[in-house]
Image (cartoon, rainbow, N blue to C red; front, side, top):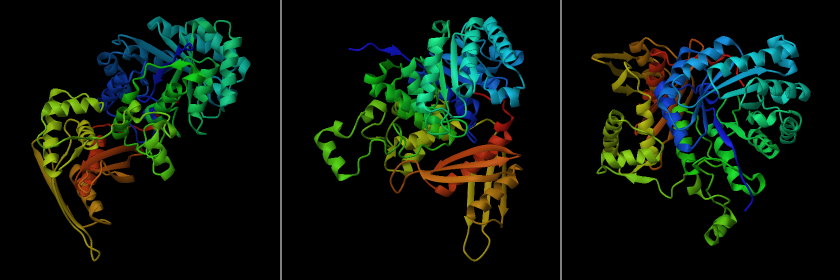
Length: 516
């Protein structure tokens, strides 16, 4: 059997992935995703950018305190305040890493940093040394490395390793590289940097040209030992290298790459569903590995081949990535233990109080639906995870609409012991009227930019899953709601978005420092 080398999987869903517009997560959601990443077998979790906001600092600190089983990483620019803030946030981590970065390409040197090459090297060395004083595990990234002159990139990498970097990450920050180009960059570093054997070479590829996975694999062929990626390929603009795709490519084509990861691949689909539900970023049906159609065979010739021998048209087994033969699991007579066990299988970790709340919601749903599917259970749990303290809760609503006049909507909300009702006779339709009534009660007005409704599972009695992306004072905020009543699902999604604004969950991505 051919030898195999380990590839470190560095997941940045909670940092780069969360910077996708509308993908911000609250603290409880980040903790849920972090634990799911540990269960998946991720080696390094980039938990956030501590200097970016108090919320980012709090999230990195909480993950560092409570999540074990992976290295917890915080991002920082090459300046003292960033590095110290990251080190403080990671103070309680059993296994911590500080990831410092500085742009190196000519276009960034001239227009963004206004620094020459010697100043760049001096700043990089100072940043790595300061970080090394606070933590033994240091990663350095020359931002926009793919567009940096190779001679200068070699100089910067050599200097960063000399200063104490244990990992050097080579980002294709704007998704500009091609596989041949990027493979040559990694090979050049391997051949020309004298101390390169003292650090792991990492790659962080963006997907602007749809080449993030291909570029990452080319880097592995050239000698890279770490891949930075995200669940479902989330990230700024067109996203990042997709974790599930690059991991399964390495596994399926071991004959080419001779490399392995620690990823527990049957956790890929549950983790994908968890992140999709929390962020509201739906996975396209034909997405490789985790899309609903990834293992569907409709063409007659394919079906015939599959019946005779699966390998004729399947290069992977669906169960290897977490698809199950059937997801019909629970009914109205199922107990709390069965629900907890299925929730764990789906990638959720429920506390006692969370389990009680979800179980109560499950019982109500089971009275309405004859068959309860995994998608229903996931929707209930994700709906519960969106609940935050002191938020408005839906008590009841009534709406009347016709083609002949303005709609009329009455809604009642509660917050603690407070209960308020409002009636409006305006709007473009019943939902618009209900949204106006919610704004009147809460005093929060948001602008809906995107509104989607889909079925959480299958069947006429399936739960409707509504996702709203809205704007408040220039900030993007997301809301999500589920119900067998699609109108109620939309109301819950709008109310969830309003509550996120009310408790300060919204954050403007444009105010965040730029990153790799």
